[in-house]
Image (cartoon, rainbow, N blue to C red; front, side, top):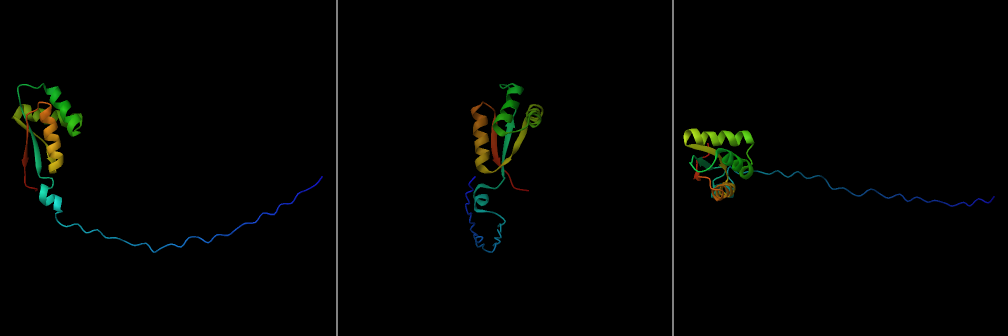
Amino acid sequence: RSFSTTSLTSTVIDRPATEEKKTIEILKDDQTEDEQKYGGEGWEIRLWNDPFNKREFVARCLSTICGKSDTESYQIMMQAHNNGMGVIGRYNLEIAELYHNSLKENGLTVDMVQVDDE
């Protein structure tokens, strides 16, 4: 038998140098520029009762367009049905416009009003 000897060499590598961790503190003004321009969460979408749309359709639109749960959708729809008007929610301007336009495109009677943040 012949044995072959192979020498293995290992190389030690220094660990990489690390920098000190820096902490960045983010200060938030009372109102950002967008909140001043668009009114923060100050846009309310309201659903009005109408004699055209079926209640199930209205609730389904609230679920699919506004992301409301089935329970929330039903409650908002019934509020509009019983009282003439139901509040869908308060949103910033861009989201409010998106929901408002999408609901209108589906034939729902909705409006969008600016409200004071409380």
